[in-house]
Image (cartoon, rainbow, N blue to C red):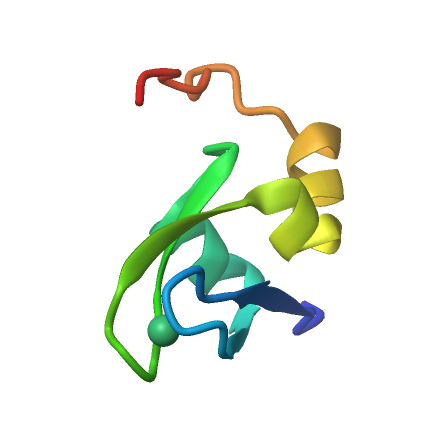
Length: 78
Ligand SMILES: [Zn+2]
């Protein structure tokens, strides 16, 4: 099995510091699943914020689109 790593990149809307995290496929799946938005927590001010998956981690977004889970249609409520 390959150990592909995915980098999540975003910026905190509160303090503006950049957010970066590298996760394996399994970790990403577990934490964020196929939801179109990822909930991230700023390492500086601890603010929780949402980042669009396709912008924060295009690679993972592509992966999700290639492998849509039959059961996991996104629960699209705010
Ligand atoms: Zn912050």
